Image 1 (cartoon, protein in one colour):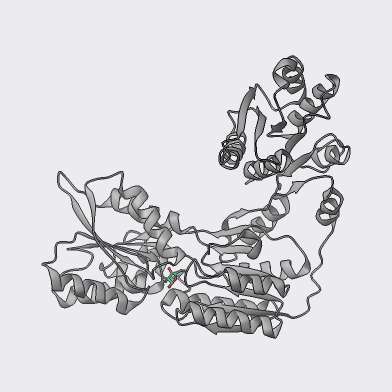
Image 2 (cartoon, helix red, strand yellow):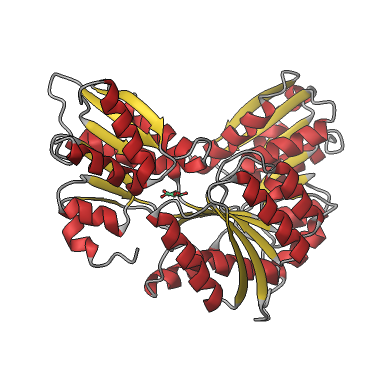
Length: 479
Ligand code: AHR
């Protein structure tokens, strides 16, 4: 994120999108430096007219950068802009350029954007750096989440991705004001329009309960519309919320695409939008934040469990996949994550895959259709959610096939029904996807209305359960 924003900033400085960039990599061995460089390359690499040269410095201090730049005057003649992956190195480069009389020809962009004297933002205000990309420290958020963990709050996120900003002379003072301001929540009632996917699964019902309970707890008037898995109904609901002039719109989007037009209408009406549970493909400035799980990781965890618990011997194991609804982020990403691990182990083969729309009946139908076409020859079922897995289990039993014994079944969600099936030996593994997003969502909504900057993304935690842990865990399940 920081590196790519540095790339966008350098593109802006280069104007016609061509020229030579000198990248000063501080301590290239660090993951931070590598990620910033990789993000920078992702943006710059799209422009064949831009040539990038990289100098790796032995550390991330100012003086070695000064020394390196100062002695290379002849190599600087062709450089149009310098990108340093921290502000100290950027300052060293600037001071060397100044002593060489070249500071006006070669703008310098740094990273970190801290706010102390002679730190990134101050250097921009002193006209020494053309820009710096802020690296949020996350201190306040870390303390808040530590308290949530100590208080054993549910749904504490696994990861929070904070926003970084491109700070230039034109926005530096406003940036300082915003981050120094303490945003007080006035406690007044907030109105939220929530477009919910539907009632397709036990997970969804638990998610809806969590949202409604949290709305009450956080003094939020909630208008929730159930779309019965129809994007058209969700778009209608969003338009009704705009008309109602709610404070915030929250969407759990049934599919990833087709939202831009209605989200632009919400933006034009000045109503912030939050994506809850699922993600969409849209410009990042149309969505304020996303709260939900890492579906790709869930798919990976499902296949890792299979790899570690289902022996192939010298043969191969055939997999049947029950997919959610086409185009939904959990469907696309659980499949993506699963296949990413699967392709490394050729003794496991994806034999059949179909969409079951996350419903019990959908799971039943896939297995019934499969059995109409051939004898049962499947060793493993991978289901994108518990409801489809339980529907499949019903059909298997009707055909005298022992679920959990003749066929290993791995599912996602880890609802109470899944735990019961695991304790009965009919389901082998359930990867958790926490539906209790209500408290985190409503806290984020109140923070946002109070003026606080929202994280780019709040990612919930997921654990993996199987028959060795189900008995112990089932009593704790709240959904
Ligand atoms: O978006 C989360 C998914 O939607 C759950 O895994 C599934 O049960 C629900 O339908």
